[in-house]
Structure formats: structure tokens, C-alpha cells
Length: 586
Image (cartoon, rainbow, N blue to C red; front, side):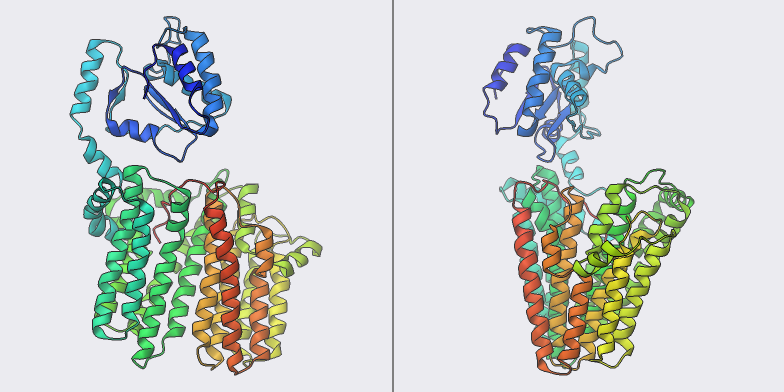
């Protein structure tokens, strides 16, 4: 930290700082909470940020900062810390400091400046003794640390997380921060704990099930703690974004596998139920992702249904009821943990299938009503995001390149749904191993290509990716379950896990603003229609033979290897965004 005599001296001192370093300007008269400065000056997610009397710039904004500082120096005089008497009388007092004027200049030049919400925290630059006394009094009346602890908790969370976990997990987060632990270390500890829980469930004993339930809850406490630690200490990172975005799914699905293994040891094969629960949960998530991506930047995005939802949000109990009915991760994991300890894996999966099905019906119905009653114009960015979420491979893309664009507002989702029904229906009702199922896969590929011939900007076009996910996942599930080949369903579980990871990875890349995975990756793993067709061919060629299990296992390993290597390369690279997922409740 260095003290500059005036604005000109500040410019000279900043110019001497190496280009790769973050810099900050703070008015020496600043009065406020330390956490207010922390929020304004240490968050790594934004190129530039400011609070009254203080401004910071990351390396990418340093050039704009220096230009703005030189202009401010020329405007107010090298020795003047604030605007002269001819300054705009309407300007906010906090914007009349040198940092405040520079922040405005940065925005005028096109550099976004983040101004964090301070709430009850004080950040001021008093210009006389009376103002300083008032600012110091306001600062002393608010407990800085209490505010910091409250703000570490996610603003919108589920009932169980809000009242059953966060009241004490925030203190665990502070304990971790004071001992130098990072959010990534806590995230990893949560994953390890969940994997141990899965192993305990895999023992198939009552003691193992009780231990698994307890460990799963401990894992969830750590899962909440990592985000609270990141917010408490403002430790956001690219690696943290990747870990937080993917480990929740890895933990949950690994636990499903552990329950299935334990059930088999007890003489009850529930692998089909485990895979069904995973498929349902993944399809629920893609409905959430697709709807949000289609609508978050839509123009004229209003509807009577959305207005009713906002009105209900003003009534306290309805907020919690609506959050709980969707069975978010806190409620879901609590249910899984309790049922694991007290019942059997079969009961756990039945409860998951029923609960998640009801939640899916509730959320999807509401989104359908919103889509049909709102008059929104989707953007090109939203259409691109939906196309990326569709995960169309070479077959579908080839059809889309030569087929005429479909007409009609609801034609695209109808065609996608028709293709999905043809594929799932063939897998369910045609004789297992029939080449007619392969023919149905060809029809599915053709209809999938027709569904993406034009930009997905229709009112219900956000349904296209969920239909494709259901078509692929359910087909793999049904063909493996009907094969009567030992270990085919566990192999299918591995394949769907690998593909689902790819789809979740796509979602979080889009959320980070860096776009979907590269096209070479999508082509290499075949796209949803290519993988579906390949599994149908394998079922026909390797009917009722152990080769089907081997082929599914090899396909799962190949997909997992390709997508994991590319995903790790991306998330640890400098091009990945420094974010922390606040995420949907589910």
C-alpha cells in the first residue's frame, strides 16, 4: 500500500505497478466497514469494481484506468482530491472523489464497473467534521462481521438448507477461512465424503446404510460450506466454478450407484431404478436450463402467469411451499439420507422417482403456461444456446443442412417430441434386438435434424433439448434393461453418466458466457442421435450376449475420456470465467 500526495502522484505510482497486478485507488478520507472495501476491491470476478471512495481494476482494465486517471487529473488538477466548485451539482457526493470520477469515466469508455450492494454496510467519504462523525456513527452501529456472515449465505435457497444447514454451516465457513482453507478444498472434501457414503451404502448392511445416510448429510453440509466460504472470503476461481458445477451431480449419481450395489448384495437388483432416477433428474435439470437460457434475455418477456408467480412470492408461506415442492437438492438429499438409514434402496428409488416426477410435472406445467401466455421475442444468443444444448451430432446436422426449414410456431417441438416418442416406443415395444429399432433410430435422427433446421426462437422451442435428452437416456435405459444380459444396466448407468457430464458441462460453459464445447468434441462423441443409433445397432448385433455389456462399457469409457479431458483443459485454462454457481434450487 502506498500513499499518494495527489491525483498526479497517484497516476505515477500506478504506472509503476507491473501490468499483471490488480491495483486499487482509495480516497484517504474514506470511512466505512472493512467488508465494504473487501466487497469493492477484492472480488476476482469483475474487471473493475467500485464503492464510494474506492476503485479497483484487474489487469485487463488497467489501460482504461490509466487513461481515465489522466483525464481526471487534468480535469480537477494534479493536487486536488475532489472535484472543483464547478462540478455538476447533481452528481452524487460519492462520485465526486477521484475514484468515483474515474469509475464514471471508465463506464463512459465502455468498461463495466461493478458496484456491489452494500446493504447496511457503510462506505463514505465525508468532507467535513459533521459528515465524518455521522459516517463513523453509522459504521459503529453495524457489526461488520455479522453482515459478512449473513451475506455468505445464498439469498434464495431451499427450506431445509436455509433452516437446517445454513444457521451453522456459515460458522464452519468462517472457521475454514481463518485457517486458510479454500473453497476448492472444501468442495473436494464434500466429494470424498459423498464417495465414502456411497461405499458405505454399497456394503448392503443396515449399519452401512445408516453410516451412508449420515455421511451424505455431512457431505451436503460441506457442499453448502464451500459456497459460503467463497462468498465469505471472496475466493472465486475458474477451478472452483468447474468443481462446484460438476461435483454435485457426481456425488448424487455415485451415491445412486452405491445404493444399487448394496441392494444387489442384499439380493435385490435395483440398477434399473437407479438409472431411472438419474435419467429423471438429468431431464429435470435440462428443462430448467433450457427454459432459463431461452428467456433470461428475451424482449417483452412478461405473462399473466409470471405476474401471478411474483404476487405469490410476496406471501411468505407460498415461497417456501413452492421451493419445497420442486424437491431441491437440500430436501432431496435429506430425504435420500433418512430413507437410506431407515428403509431399503428400493424404497429410496421409488421415493425419488415419485417425488421427482411430481416436481417435474409442477415446474414444467408452470413453464409451459408462461411460454404460452407471454409475448416474448427470443434473442439470437438464446437461440444459439438452445442449439448448443440440443447437442446435435453429424447425422442431425447433415439433415438440417439440406432440409427446408419448418414452418409454424409449434412445429419444431412437435417434430422433436415425435422423434423421441418413435425412438422410445420402438425400444419399449418392438422385439428386443429387432432391426426395426435401428430403423426407428434412423427416423429419430431424421426428425432430430428437421427440428434444428431453423433458429430455436419459438415459444416452446426450449422443449427441444429436453426431448432429445429423454430420447437418448430413456432409449439406453430401456434397451439395457430389456437385454437380459448380466451387468448391462450398470454399464448403461456408466454411459448415461458420461453423457450427462457432457451435457452439464455444456450448460455451465454457456452460463459462464464462453459458449458451448467445441464442435469437434460434439462430432467425436456422435451427438445425441448418433449415440442413440449406435446403442440400437449394438443391441441388434449383440442380442442377448455379454458383448452388449462390453460394448456399452467401452462406449462409456470412450465418451468419459474425451469429455473429461476437454472439460478439464477448458476449466483450468485462462479463458474460463471466474464465477461461482449460485444455481437453481434443484
